[in-house]
Amino acid sequence: MEQLTIDEIDLKLLGSLQTDASLSNQALAERVHISPPTCLRRVKRLRDAGLVEREIALLSPDKLAALTGHGLTAIAEITLDRQGTEQQEAFEARVVQDEAVQQCYRVSPGPDFVMVVHVRDMPGYLALAQRLFTGDANVRNVKAFFSVKRSKFEPKLLLAQ
Image (cartoon, rainbow, N blue to C red):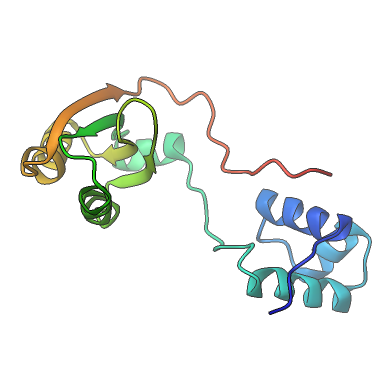
């Protein structure tokens, strides 16, 4: 299998896509100073290689709050009683299926997992905690931190350019 190599133009394309994936091929080509056919071919190659996982819309929580309520964001640290590979994978498989879990990281040292969850309100968090933590006999400890303000949210990866 041929190993993927990327150059400066590919890095510029990836940087532009992660800033605004809604750009047309024409606008993206102009931004990185290449022809539209070359841009289309390169972006397809980057997508096919799996460097672009998916393209999504980032919603504005502050603007949605007026329509749906603010909701509650919590950062939860979870420590398992038994940390074997099988137990970690079982816990991870269960929590990543829950729509309230926005992010889940296996971490070391300290807790076994750190998760970012978003629910409608405190009763919603209680239901989530019972569903994911209390009902699992292997969860030893849960420490939750509740967000009072989101100062920064930037899903962009730093690319060497």
